Image (cartoon, rainbow, N blue to C red; front, side):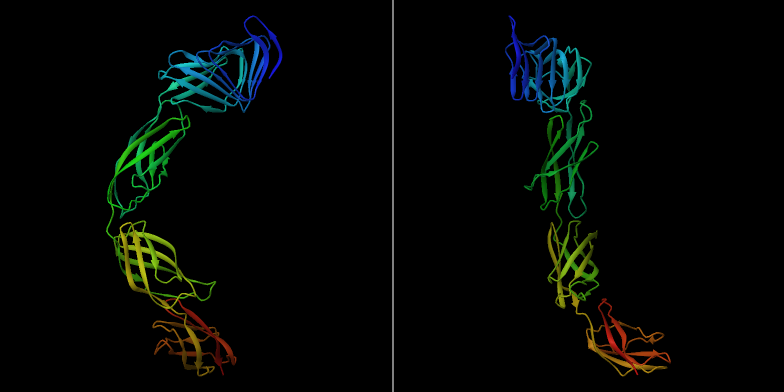
Length: 421
């Protein structure tokens, strides 16, 4: 859009507002006198020409505007000269040919005054540094970063949480922000790399033995991208074996909202840090797996009240295959107490018979009778045992005392009808 246009012999004087795209190239373009140019779109300058602002002309670029200058290895700079300039938005550099490293180019020059700064940059295939003076915006061709690949030898039976794949040698463009993508060469999707200082690492698990070509691609915020290859020589271990589980018994949860928590130690061979553990009974849930060594795993489990009692198979899976210990773990039912007889007598020791189900050798017995003592259980079978309980004199007679039985596997039951006569 133009306002107040006047005609001279060589050009037209007009106030310009650009919301679209204006391309200047192959012609001389001048804004003279007190004209203003407001760029909220794209102003592109090329072919060795510049937009010249003379006689108090003003150039203002808004936050949505883009000024696209051209750096040509043969003809030099196509940019903006003169004027009172207020800068914002994006500076885009288009390159023609390969400018010499270290050369500086004034994409804006000879300004009467200059304020503001570009907030975003878009460059061609070369690395640039942008600087400002009181009258110019200067772009210097910089040396981009380079990459060196790092070969690795991986044994998948030990932790490989960080695999170094490449090292960055920075250029002189000053403080770029890098991002990295790693293609591991085994047909799996690429993954993001982690950059610490100049070191690039990644996490990956190979499932077959061999030598793989690893391709690492790094980009910086200036638009420079480099790719380097390295090799990963991988040895995948044999399939694991599982020989024992300790403890060998776990108990059902006491209710749907109270599963049993337990920590199991698995013993075997060829365990790796990425091993997973599973059980043939769906009522057992793995809550954690901790790799201790090639022969030991620590496994946290939760056992539901619905888990079926009986023998359970335990399977360990690694990149090398699977190993199963058949029937190495037993799920025990929660114990029950159906009767305790005869009644206890205050001031004396009474040997009672406890009948029920699910009793285990090594069980313990407690009671809530104040001052009572409980002896060691004897004659323990799955359905009964005997225990001597001594009740202090003066104990109140009633049939609502507690007797609690706890098995070695932590199964527990409390009988609410222990009687003192």
